[in-house]
Amino acid sequence: MDLLNTLVDKGLRRELPSREEALAVLATSDEELLDVVAAAGKVRRQWFGRRVKLNYLVNLKSGLCPEDCSYCSQRLGSKAEILKYTWLKPDEASKAAAAGVAGGAKRVCLVASGRGPTDRDVDRVSQTIEAIKEQNEGVEVCACLGLLSDGQAERLRAAGADAYNHNLNTSEGTYGDITTTHTYADRVDTVQKAHGAGLSACSGLIAGMGESDEDLVDVVFALRELDPDSVPVNFLIPFEGTPLAKEWNLTPQRCLRILAMVRFVCPDVEVRLAGGREVHLRSMQPLALNLVNSIFLGDYLTSEGQEGKADLEMIADAGFEVEGAGTTTLPEHRADALADAGCGSHAQSGCGSHEAGACGSHEGGGCGPCGESAPVAAAAEVPEARTDLVAVRRRGAGTDLAPNA
Image (cartoon, rainbow, N blue to C red; front, side, top):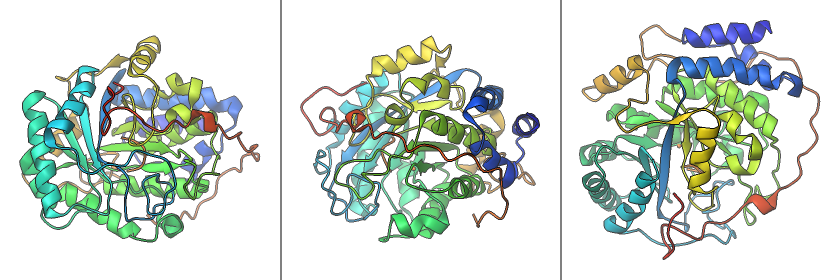
């Protein structure tokens, strides 16, 4: 396909595809799917080889959130029967993190429900970061605490945080349909605060909430403009007891096309396969490793993932290798730019490159309207709801049971 050859060439040069090209990827047929995966896989291997980075989530505070994000089992008014507990103590969180590190995780993601942290919360998380760093040499720590106030990103960085996650989740045009208690602009502001403090910014999306192809392209192009170093791609887990419980819109094939589109638009960033992969990709998960270079190990915030041992076997069986602690995840040009950002402001040049002039918490581990059209795919059948695959987390943080890692 001329389209795929063009996208590979652009990805290898870190050039931005057109919106029409990105939409065309989402419109490809199932018969073309393996060609799409192979093409995006060339771009993935150019920048990340066959390495897979493992990340591990620690849910510091579960449930009881005052925000009304429709996708979230921890939201205001949620009737999902999830674990609910207040802040873990630093030593409890460090013990949970150690299980993930022992399983091969290179990054620990500390997540807390809520609109955003108070200064006391930042102190608490700072102590947790310090405890984890002291007990696990070389581990990366990413914080995900909601909307940040002025100065909080700097304090987290001073405590040893390496990254901060705050997802855009969906397009600006549809954001108000998903959440009303804060705005899309609030989320953009927090990602920019993380950039400004010299933290590695992590921001991604949730697919499967009833959005259009145009919405998906809009949010991914917005992410490229924001320039995060990592882009987690979540697939909606339709929890019973949440407003989106009936939204079963994804097939394994569509998930793969979405991941391929993200890779083409953000060729040299850490694209992370996040929440919902077991529910929606199912037996096709190994194919996704040709598109992403990062996954979460084990369980998520309020749902259970597949066994950590199965994750490791999947990576090995698919011919990939776990990224070692001594290996730099990002390509050299991005790693150098991130190091420079620690001494000043982060370059705002887009996730295709940090160079001037170049055209980037749900279950996981974080631009303007499209005026171009693409071929319209044949209407897909509505996938069967697989509620049997949605398992509420009952182990690990906040319980007396051993975590899955």
